[in-house]
Structures are given as C-alpha cells and as structure tokens.
Length: 295
Image (cartoon, rainbow, N blue to C red; front, top):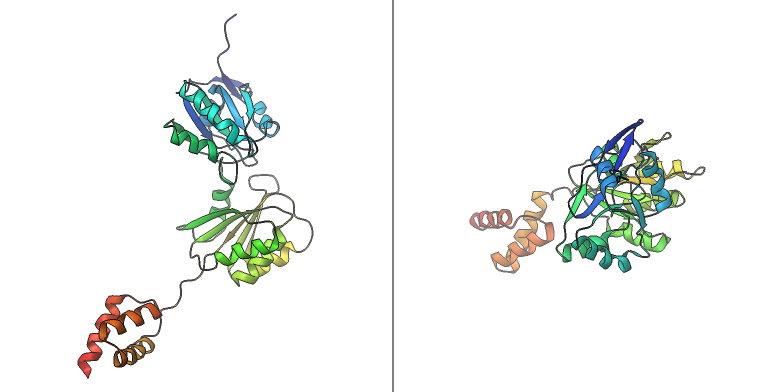
C-alpha cells in the first residue's frame, strides 16, 4: 500500500505539502482566529516529522482543523531542557521538526529558548515561519509610537516585585508592551498609573476573536475601567514611553558655567556643567570660550 503524502486541507480542498530541508522550523500560529495562518506554516506543519507543542491538546484544535496528521510531541517549560539535546541530535541526523506555542509566535513569553540556543550552539539550522503575534497586533492598533518599542512580557505576579519592575522602566523612552493575566490586569494598571503617571496607554483584549476590543486612554482612566467587573481573555498592555526631558535654559547653565570657571580651570568647569545639565560638551566648551573672551 502506497504511503500517503503529507498534506493539509482548506475548505474541503486537500493540498500536498512539499518536503522540508532538515532543521527546526519555528512556526507562528493564530492567536485566536484560526484563519490567521499562512500557507507556508500549514505546509511546514504538515511536512515536518513531528510538531513540538507547548500543549498538545491546545494545538490539536488547530492541527485537526486543517487535517494535519503530523505526530505531536509535548515541549514545554518543564521538559524542554531535558529534551533539547535529543532533538538537536535528531536534526543533526537529518530530521525535521516544527516548533509551535499554544498561540502566536513561539519564544515570546512562551517556551523554546533553550532549544533554539542548543541548536545555535550545535550549528544546526533554525528557520522562522512568520505569522501572528499578539505583541505586534496590539502595538499597531494602540495609537502610540511604533518607531521604537520594547517588549517586557509578563510582569512579576507579586505586588512588590511588580512595582519594582515598573519603576525600573520609568525612564524608558520607547513604547512598552506587556502581556498580563486578566486576573491581575486591574492591579497592574493601577500600579502603572501610580508609578508612570499620566501617560497614554492602550489595553487590547481577545485580539482577532469575536469579542476583540481595544481600550485607549491614560493609565489612570484605564485602571478605573478595569477596576470594575471581571475581565476575560489575555490582555496586552501598550504604554507610551517617558517624555524627553526639556532642554535646560541656556541662561541657567551659562550662569552656572561662569561660576564654575571662577573656581576651577576652564576644561574642568566645562566637564562639570556638561555632566550636570546633560549637554553636549562641544556646546558648553564653545560657550566657555565666549564667556572667557568677554572678560
């Protein structure tokens, strides 16, 4: 009996998956809407020898929906270090594996990093199969700057550690993105409002699903919204970065420069004022020369 070629189906139509080169394929999967998956991702999942799943039961919903019969192996935070060496050895011998998380892009607040590092250290090929990401989906609808941003995953669950983590980010200028459990969302927003102050932010819930919603406002406004009632669904919080400090008044720092020049050599005075006001040394040095010439 001839062996059936690996494949998948869409809307009742069956497609054959082309063969894969040996390696590990990091495959992004939908974050809610099962249609948010690429053809290349389906081909990869169907053609791989095995799919490494964060939770095989969760992944079954996606794989079964598209008729993908590939063997599923659980790979999660509790066993990934123990299994990494064996997977690397099998790939080195010519195997093909696909790595997926329960939803979205693997490794972003999901398992997989120890395996990827082991693959890199062994010089084995790792291929990204891009697709859905809650992080990027929330960022692009938040209405906040996207030219520079940082992803901070989940904050610590305990109040003290969470507050310390938020304080450490107080001076960050880039837009910040966080994941949060619906059970802690109100407390986290309240802590951010207290520490970050009146910054603009957005909270995205149930992205790509039927009850998708995005709330925008100041952190205090959002904290008040989510303090009432029960929140359902994983949340993504997007927070504006710290405002750039205003430039010091030229009259102030030049007066300070004049005072420093009276007490110490010119170069030392320039260094002192440059550090105190966060200025460019060249600008302060030129001002010092001008002040010296006026005497």
